[in-house]
Image (cartoon, rainbow, N blue to C red):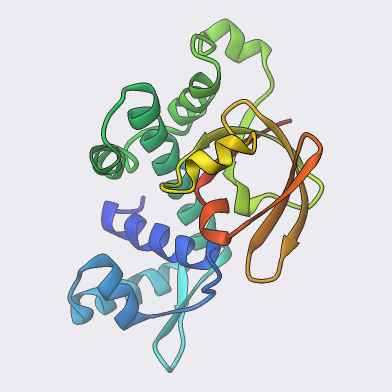
Length: 211
């Protein structure tokens, strides 16, 4: 099982990759995590042996498929928890983020699945509905493939969020991924309009698919 700090490392590397940085220097990662470089490198070497990442001779880090899967899962948990605390409970964004960081390492996949559904449709998460309904899959918009039809569950970007609401991109909206833009940008279709989103905004929008 991953330790909390190891999961923080994988989540941070996953976020970096999602916004266009496929490899990250150990020194840069230490700055992002506010950790000593020597201490961090020791843990990274252990994670490399475990198959979560690779470290090149120039000290850049690349996630393996296993590490990417774990990092993406932790990031999605964080986004859903943060959305619940801020949107449903009215907590300040900073407080919601801190609470999400604390709980993301211990909350179960089932709880996250139910919580994500509840955010979009409060009251859904009963056991009978769980058995009858299709399995719900949560991801960030930046992870979606071209042509996918999705439903927005949460918009967690600060500043431009109100502008996105004006364009109709808010929880409950059905969207289609029209195309991916070089550099991890995304063009989505909302009703009859195509909207181009930066990687930072796309990575902050939680969407769902069923299947």
